[in-house]
Image (cartoon, rainbow, N blue to C red; front, side, top):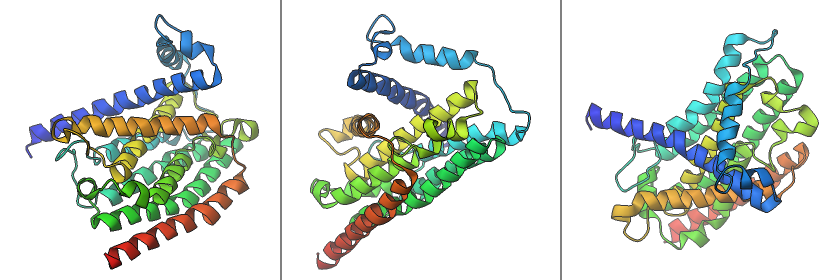
Length: 317
């Protein structure tokens, strides 16, 4: 691979990272608007509320960038980048078409899981640097939530890797079979639930529970820095949705996948993103103790059972 090709692929990933999260954000506006009867996102603009996202962007640009007097200024300003960049790096390792990935790694599964876990540092750093007790409490909740839900996610992914006999994301797609939709379904549900929790999306948004701790780690952030945290959230949805489609839905596999493989990957990922939005609208927020109990007493045993089933099938097969 020449440097020119590497540069073109990297530019493509950057363009996708700038466009796909905005598309997910616009979709969330529409889905929530129709499910909850919100008039603004349905009617703001000449056609079906298209101007709502533009208005939100203009609002963030116009807001003043405020840094609290007691905050650690350099760390406070660095936190949004720490939350955003890991998802950009992870996106580069996800194959979207046969033979196409910016970084086709032999251990792609481990790389993506490791990189996405780094994103929590942005949240922890923001909470510590804000010099705000509510922000710090939200950061501690985020850390506890990551520890609780990272384990079942890794175990669920290990089941898929064991079934495929490889840690390469591209090879997993090649080994995928339609009957995995049933065989690996429990692990898929564990992965999806843990992904929603790691992204701190409802009903797992206790670290930013407005009724308890104002807005958690984001309490002191304004303007574009706050918008970067939102972009990191939607970027995380894009990465987790594409990773789910790669592991459990066959990625680019589909009719005419030699030509339209990239379209199948994006279509499946978009469907998973809509499912995440639907989960947000449909379930109320859990309590902190309910969140921990659900992870340790429900998801981890289910993920271990899925791993044991996969090992049994592999041995007997």
